[in-house]
Every structure is written in structure tokens, then in C-alpha cells.
Length: 245
Length: 81
Image (tube, rainbow over all chains, first blue to last red; front, top):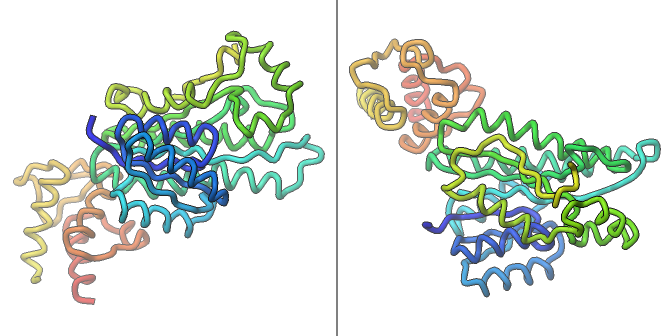
């Protein structure tokens, strides 16, 4: 496979970092976006380089139009046009609906959904020129099945699914595929924050009987980005160990 | 660059970028109706115009372009201005 330029948003930790490392191991050139955690981004960059890949860390708030434009300029100048975009950046601001503040709603929609619009739009020009591109967004089982306390998060993740289907129809004839990978319970800092009781109870509801690993999500993202997956578009691939059955 | 040069370059781009048959293209041709270019194809053509003529065509102006001759007009105006 010829080396591609890959931009992974929110790649300093968790699933994003695993995705960056997965593509690095396949010899692609990796741009690691992060919001604020410079140390974690530096560690992710070191891991990507250790896998033998060219790497670049770019700080940007992916919910902000100007910062996204700046990020794409930086990546374009250093590595070339983005050929594989992984919209992974996401936050949670969980609360029961009756307690959820407008800020909690807005922050999650901005970081998790507005970012997908901004980054996908910025990546499309280059992909249309190349007549090849892959846009893969990380959704969530929460966005498909719903989850109490996550109305904001579930709305954003469900929004990604509708976005993906629409964009897939717009650009399908140009060699560009657009898909969602929807993880269930994956062992990351985001799920660690839920506490052991919650994760143990979750594991009991999962057919496979355990939480997933970030690598198990990354390998599906990698597949969708490959030429082998050229006839899959507009889809949501659930990677949840059989949680939502 | 005079108008005839822009016209001839425009025809080249339509052939190369959008795969349209050269003898089908007239200055009065409408992109969507006569040349069967879909709306995304028009966007792609504009990107190619920007790259090839080194001009910037804002979305608001691009929306008004329906014929080959209108596309030539806008490039000519940008190159002048």
C-alpha cells in the first residue's frame, strides 16, 4: 500500500492514539491532533515515530473553524493533503437531562459534531482533487441505542451517523468513502472515569464478556481506510463485543 | 490572458477534469442541463479553475454560474481585477 497522509483528531490518548499507531505500523504519514494535553501528544508522537512513521503533532480545538483551518494548513504544508481523515476527538459532559446545563449541551455538540463538519469539509477539497479519500468518524453505541445521562453525547454521535450517510451520497462517485465506527465500552480514560462498578456491570452485558481495547477499534478504522473497503460507504460499523444485541 | 485563451483553457479543463466530450461544449452550454455535470461537478470545475488560473472564486459568486460562458466571465473578471 502506498503511504497516505492520515489526520487523526483527538489522537493523544485512547482510541485516537491507537488509530494513529495502527496507521503508523502500516507506514502511513500521521498528523496527531490534540486539544490541550501536550505531554500526551508528545508521547503519542514518539510512539508513532517508534513504529517508523513520519509524525506531526498539531494543537487545535476542532470545534473552532479558524483553528481547524490553521490545522489543515499546517498538516498540508508538512505532510501534504489529508487523504485519510479520522474524526475521533470527543468529550463527555454527562448529566441527567433535567440537570443538564446549556454549556454541557453546547460543549459536547461543538467538540463531537461541529468538529466533524469542519474537519470533513476542510479535507474534502484535497480528496476531490485526488479522486480518493477516506473519512471515518468515531461514533458510539450511545448514539444508536441511547444512554441515560448522555442525551448530549448520544445526540452528537447520532448526528454523525446522519452526516455520514449524507456526505457518502454526495461524494461516493468520486472515490471517497465516508463511514462511522461505533464503539461500545472500550477501556480508555473516558470509561475509567465511570468507575469500576459501572464497567464491571457493563462487562456482564457484553457478549464477549469484557471491555474492548482501543486497538480492537483501530483495526476496524484501518480496514475502512483501506482500498479493500472501497465498496463500503455511509455505514456504521458497531464494535462493541456484542453489547447492543 | 485574453478571452479566447480563457475559453480554450476552460474547454480543456472540462474535457480533462470532468470527462466531457470536446465537441459537445459550446460557450452557451449549461453545465447541468447540456453537459450533464452534477452540482458537485460544478464545484470541482471551480476548484480546477482556481488552481489553473490562480484566482479565488467565492462561494456566493460561484452559485450564479450556470453556463460555460458565465464561468469564463468570472475568470476574466478575476484576472483583470
